[in-house]
Image (tube, rainbow, N blue to C red):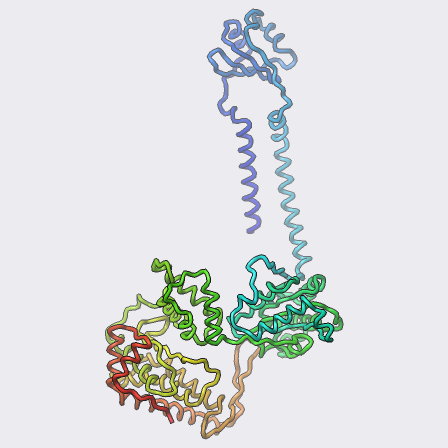
Length: 613
């Protein structure tokens, strides 16, 4: 329907254009001259009222003495003078009239004759041509249905090199070697090395897998084809396998070449789910990929680069050496990598002189490269919204909170009592965090509503940590109960504001017992197995591999962790009630407290960090 309306519009525009052409060539006919009969013409000549006559075929274009124009028709069989003499014109009067003969073989003559007669034919030809083209398009779609929707990377548009990828030192070294293999193959062939068939980029979302593939495309001097794995699969069985064959045929003709398949887990999931049988379209597509990458034909110079954030669901036959020889892990950036990533994404943005990107890197542990890019973009939008010419440090810090929690809900109206409850709740979190030795330092406390949170306390470590101890987990549990305890201590009642904290604390306590083996009573053992139902997407089933008596012990140990953390939070709040009051009062007045101001405030209360035993 969309194409039909498009062609109808095109036909209307064409007809309007033809009408404009006619009006341009025959526009003078719009002001019609006076029509004279031959008798009137002869009378005017005899009276001396005619200045000139121009003969155009049988048409006489007449100019009168007063420069007015007129038109008349002569006899087709006779000449002009013979016609006029037949009607009684005087010879001496006719000699005073200027007579000229105009050529009828010009462009206007043919336009006036040919176009009116051919216009219906042309419209019919265009109409039939449109029908034939639609039919041909349908046939072409039928013949190209099994063709891969390949895209050839152009190095001239948005070229990215390894210099544009911050951090990821080891992955870049591995991939630079692949590029070097393509550029200087003899150096490796002389040592008996063979070209790797496949490289699998593994990492969490936003860690730069696709960006790294773009860098490989920009660095290599060979054809680089890319497509998404989801483009293979269609509702018709066999189309995915056909597109895989077409993909590798095109890549082999351009060899040596690179092929990038994004999100390969869309077709590369583990086979044998028991659903769909051997004719499942996804399995057929995966089987064809396995054959093309390392089947009977081995002499190929095509390197396949694939990206996924779910390596645990990929088929083992796809991951074996000979297909994907290298598995490159794209880690979350550490503080140094975040600093470099911020430097790259800050290019082209007018930053104020006081901006410290290193301070931003310190405040953003757990942020991926995509998160940091989004962070600076949000800061630029915030600065532009307030009419600034430069991006300040305050804009960037506000953007961190927006990315973590959501935008500020300034339109949300809360009562004074709700604000007071929120202030004591957040003060309880901050106080317990400051009083525990193994808790993360408080970076900011606020009662400003953001996203779903009525208030928030940001706690971030100063150093990167890959491992977490039991003591740190216990401190995290106690901090989670700090808001709950502070509310009850002040108001002798509790609200629904602690529901999210209780839920997170319970989940963490269960992991301490069943996953991390940190229970003194149950010991170092994992309880329960999580299994993914591949056919049902991301649905997880929990398989209990323990008895009912052990389940009772697990529940008891979870309660031990929760009660221990709750009592620790309660002891801190009751012991340092003056500090709690000061923090809450400060929050109600200023709404937010930053790191330096917070620790300067509690310094006067002589808090000595303790450890939960």
